[in-house]
Length: 299
Image (cartoon, rainbow, N blue to C red; front, side, top):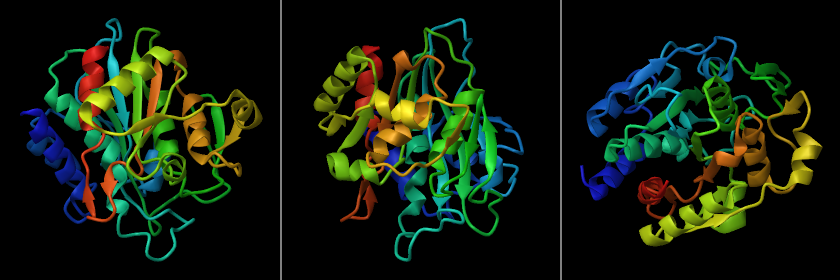
């Protein structure tokens, strides 16, 4: 496929309503549309991925290939919430219609991998739903993820939970580049506007390459902070909350993810909650596929 066709495929996936792209058929849809092999990894029944989907047999982690950890890998961990109703902290009326787009991270990751033939490039995506009727996660629940005990303070902060579970399950080495891409927070839109991707990394060189790639692609992106004082305040302890009441919501969500990245100096996080979707047209934009393709070529 050409780069333009890859972006169109990503848009098509994000635009699909849940009755056309769901837990029953998503692997087949990805394989057919993107012409990729999709491997499936079962996850623990006591983890967020399974609990949020009502233990559905098709919720789990998908990957595009198995690459030896002995090699330097570029791993795109894309959020795949196929529909997000908010769980028991349900979204307000009128906010449900666009929630089919909560798998745009997964769509982006798999689309990029379908375009690039690099043998060390992998999409690694946790896939679930966040409904109400079949959700087995309640506010106040405590769930062990990696070496952290996570208190569920908000069931609508679910994307960071499945990404954390995937990151905890992922074998990571100091050589690997980890890219998380997700429709993670509404707060990112207030920080950088509706057309830009929020970028988080402590690695200046990674950000410079990403910004150069986004400029070339004509896709807006801007770096946001990972403040150390916020990390110390909320996350550097054995028991943490998945959502905390503090002002910089997009940074807090990224800092939550950081706790599960074993080598955060080689990690970059992309919050595409607004940039992946044209609200006026009610259509997917295909962001940040073009930028990611450019970026990976520089790594």
